[in-house]
Length: 458
Image 1 (spheres, helix red, strand yellow):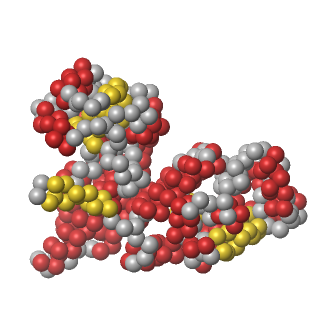
Image 2 (tube, helix red, strand yellow):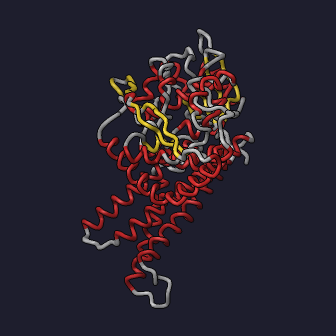
């Protein structure tokens, strides 16, 4: 994939969206009108077939207008999924408004089924394309070439982007600034290196006027200008920009730990945990039998963990270690030189034969869905810590306890047990500060993929 990769990706997404939306609408029609494709089709059913065609065309248009196919948001973050979800909310609101104004009778079953399957299909489709894009970027393809303007060799932006291959921001050249900035030289360097982006790092020694001049010079050069603020680990929804007498001000909204969003999150947890327990109950019995046959010990292992605001509770797991294994934990961790604030290590001699299999596929953690039902945990959140781990926390690390711990989280989909302590804390704090229902859905989808591949599980 060469220089025209952006156009090709947009076309691929467009055709995939058309295909998936068509399947979703046909599913809705067949559920509502099972005899739609029989020889006895009625005029009313033909009307709905035409309605579905118009609905699909508008849906594709809404996805285009709201920027869901913008190449700048593809491959990373939650913005792409948010825009897909927003398109469905816009469509639903539009149908409700039009049917009310013109007194139209629209089948709620058809709309509900079509939009539900549409959301699932579009999310899965974007996930597949995202995976393909990541594969291309690991090969050095489908990237935006970046000229990094920085005042330091160890700019945080550079270090982060080198680890974030999936973002497609490939730093081709660093332009180190000094006390005197030459804007023309920056633009010349970007043109020589055929860069798509000029990225202003966090310590560039560049003034506001020089930054404006740089923007003016790039107006006809087809080169984007990106500025990295010194405010890090803050997600887009918490950032608001206002303008006061030509002075741009960056507002940081406070993290929300209560209110309507919390109620929706709890309802989300309740629905999924209830359905999960019903569906998985037969598997619980099979796993229980396997554990009993292995060493005749207890099936469920209870361990005291700290939840929201430091309140302790018993986390439930299928037992994967020998009985009374916790008493040996500290000595094992010291032998393997594992950070005591991290829960697992790959060669723990306490793990049973069945336990190795359960851990490999993260099956041992499924009983925690009961903790979710009881309100002690959430489906998504930071990892539930032990008391001895919390006792070793620095002051700011205790912010992990501001929300309920999760059955899965960013730590689960970003390396799991292979992460070091600093990265674990950074991911957990990012979630605490920036959580949203869309982010939760994205993490759940990524968790399923990570578990299927067995990444970082032991």
